[in-house]
Amino acid sequence: MDQYLAALEQIEQNKKNAAALESERLDFKQEKKEKKETFQDIAEAAVCFANASGGEVVLGVADRGTGVEAFLGTDIPAELLKERIYTLTEPNLLVEVREVTRASSRLLVIFVPAGVDVYQTKKTSPTHRLKDMCLVMTPAETSRLHDERRGIDWSAQSSGRDIGEIDRAAAFKLRDLLSRVTNPAVQELATADTESLLVALRLLRTDDTLTNAGELLLCQPIGSQARNLLVYQHRATSGGEADFVRRWGAPVVSAIPDVMEVIANRIGITPVSTASGQQIQIEDYPLSAIREALANALMHGDFREDRPVSVEHSPETLLVRSPGPLVSGVMPSNILTHPSKPRFPHLAEVFRTLGLAEQLGQGVDRMFRDMIRSGRSAPTISEVGDQVRDTLVTFTGGPPNSRVARFLSTLPTHEQNDTDTLLVTTVLCDRKTITAAGIAPIIQRQIEASEAILRRLATGEAHLLEPSAGTAGRRHPNYRLQRDALIALGPAVRYQKRSVSESDAKVQEHIVDYGIINSRTIQRLFDIDVYQARDMLRDLLGREILVRVSEQTRGTAVKYGPGPKFPIKKYARSAPVEDEGTLLF
Image 1 (cartoon, helix red, strand yellow):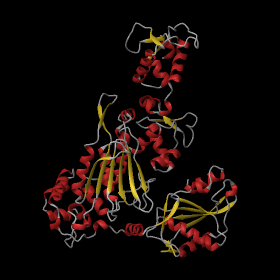
Image 2 (image 1 turned 135 degrees about the horizontal axis):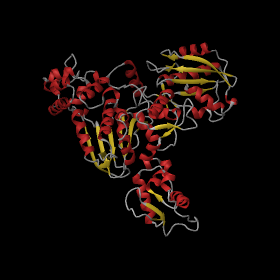
Image 3 (image 1 turned 30 degrees about the vertical axis):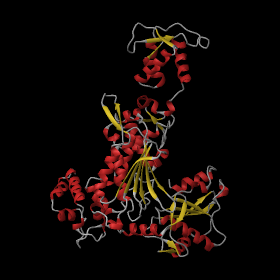
């Protein structure tokens, strides 16, 4: 369903008003007193979307109010509106205008594509869409967007520096990185002469000058050009004073290994045993995820801004902040599924050749996968700042959820490496059921594609999900975790948690009905595994609510009955049922 259709349905059903439904890709307008004012208003909204990732403008809906009264309608001809948008914008912006009817009102929907240039109206400066607002673009933002859309790559342009200015230590590090790459053809470059090496990496231009990427990676700065490119700060607590600070300038090829070593030295490891007895080592923050965040910050950060990439590290959070917003067209809401789009393609190509970043745009997926597989929440990616915007990646630390990490390690290998599967699992640790429509914005896919993923997880090798009985026949059922997954995840499934009093009551009711209880019965009553059942029985024995009543002392044959502190007044005791095993199993 198109975004505007879903929004119109919510307005008509009195769920939300238009203002509450506006987003980075949807805007609502109503006619002004004069037609020419309406044309200008819609042209400005169209420019705003064209300078971002495109979007939809619906004309004829009131900002406030819900129900049929919110549909004010419009009598402006669709072709006339399209023509006026074209003539009021520079360069001329071509949009699609479609008539729709809602609650007997005629509306116009303007579909604005992401532009191929930087647009403005003849009366206003360039603007772009940020969440549900249109903001005037700064000169730096306008220049950056112009370069991106014209394919102008700053990193491939001449730095004016020659091969003789390359730092020797950086050149040695470059060769070391090449020697570690798995591609034999790339490995051979490690032993090539310097000029051949630089030509192969396209760091040396035909005029014998280094590209800006070459200077950044391999040269020391000249005099007043020296500045910080990377800043690292460590704090014992997220709100405390920095207890360690280090700064790096160019050459970047030497700085990246240094900063990764500094981070690694301050990351702890938690051992977790899997069900098969294998032990996995869980880092406070997976270094592979941090490496990708750092590489992305350096590849996509705008070095023309006089601000460094900064890393702020504490046990609670690790933040990687890079100068400049996300590349045009890429947003936090589509970053997992949007094709790779580096700000500086030449620099990104060199990073990937050197093994400093993932191939095929998988770096963000790697961050998500490695964080979730380590028993932690997925990272968040956002744009921060008002006049000066930066890109921020936030990793949440703290003790890992070992139950989640242990469970995910038992999934088929291809599912362990599937970002969609991992996100679905973490969501179902908080929600009892999900639908394709509910999971779609989280995995950043269309509803039908999301349904196919949920269906695969229900019927495929993973056997992770099942449709609920009452919705199994629907086109888009409600999905929940299968019983074995619930048991394996145990207390990681938050809605499964019961208070001590609730658990006690359920055990006591069973004792009243059958006289005795055992570990297998506890597992069935609470959908838990043998270890959780053992811990629950130990607690009940320790509080003398239960006592052992069988001769056996180990295994599933051990039976328990009412203890000295069993609430006799609340429950009348009954004689033990001899054939409990037959009744229960």
